[in-house]
Length: 501
Image (cartoon, rainbow, N blue to C red; front, side, top):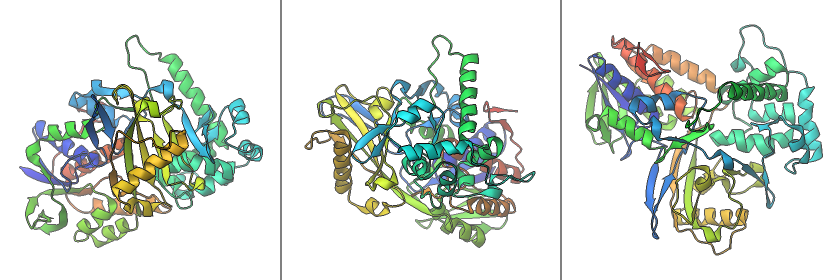
C-alpha cells in the first residue's frame, strides 16, 4: 500500500486527499494522511453556528461565504458527496452593490460588468463618476489596442498591472471607483503591482479580440441573455445565481470532504516543519518531533508556510515561493437588532475604494444576501479589514477590531450612534492572501517545471493559479494525479461528473 501525505487541510489539500481516496475505492493500493496545523479542517472556509441570546441562531461564515456558478468544481464535488441539494443561491432580488463615495453610498450602476459600462442611461445618470470621468470611460470604444499580439502569444506575454490597464483603457475614475474595490478586492491587492495576466487574463484577451472592453462585455452580456432564453428555468428548479453557498455555510463542503476521507486519516493540531528524502520515499517531520514515512507528498499550504517546508526538497522552489507576497486580513461578523437598522436592506454588499482611506475594505449584508442566516428581527453583517494600505490594523486586539467595525458600519448606514451588536466575532487570516504581482506566472511555471522533475511530489493551493475555491480544489486534484502517476497508479476521472473513466 502506497501512502501519500497531504500537508494542509484546506480545500486544496482535501481535494487532493479525496481524489486519492477515490483511487483507493477504485481498487488501487494507495492511502492518504492529511496533516493540518489547525484544530479543524477547511482552511479559510470557516462556519460557526452562533446561538442568539434571545432565541434562534446565526449561520456565520468567517472566511469565504460563496462559490461561483461558472466554475464546476464545487458542484461536482458536492454531487459526489451527496450534498448538492444543500446548495442555495444568493437572493438575487437583493443583489445591489453599494460604493462608498465621501459620506454617501452610491449604487453600482446597472450594466456595469466588472468595471466596464454596458448600458448608457445608468452610466449617464449615476453620481458615482464625474462627467469628465464618464466621457473618459466612453473613449474605450475608440482607443486602439496597446499592441497586437503575435501568433501564439498570450496574456502572459503582455502582462501589465491592473492600474496600468484600467487607466489606459478607461481612465483613473474607472480604476479608483470600481475596478480597484471590485476587481482588486478579490485579492485584496494593490492595483499598482497586481498582475492582470495572473488574475484576470480575460481582460487582456478581450482587448485583443474586440479592441474595446465595452464591446467585449456587451458581447458577453448578449451571450448570457441568449443562453437564459434558450435554457429557461424548469418548474421547481432552484433559481440560478452567480454566487452560491450551502444551507449551513461554506464549511459544509470541507467537512463533507473530510468525512469522505475519514477522520482516522486526518491529523489535526500539528504543523509540518520539514519534508526530507528517505531512500526512495519521504519523511515528513512534525513540530512535536514525530515523523511520518510516505511514498508521496503533496504540499497544500499558504506560500509563506510552504517556503520552510520545501526548503529541504528544492531550495529554488522555496526561494520562488518566498517571492510571493502574502497579505493578512480580518473578517468581523456582527449582528444587530432590526430596530437599530432603519436602512433599506435590499443590497448584498458595500465596497470601500482605497481612495476613501477608510479602515474597512467592504461590508456584506449576510442576512439579505442569503436565506435563513439570522433569527427574526436581527440583521447580520460582516466587515472586512486589511488590504494593501491597512495591514497594520490586523494587529489590533479583537475588542478594538470589533469597535472599529461597529463604528464604521454605524457611520456608513446611518444607524444610531449607540447601536451595539447582539454578538460579534473576529476571524484572523494571517498571511492568508497571496499577491499575484508582475512575474507571478513566470515563477509559477518555474515551480511547476521543477516539481515535475521530483518523483511523487507536488504542490497545490491558492499561491499558484487562482485563489477561488474551485481553483484550489482543481489544483489539489491535479497535484494528486501527478503523485499517483509517479507511484504507478493510473486513476483517471471525468472531472465534469466525478465518474471514473
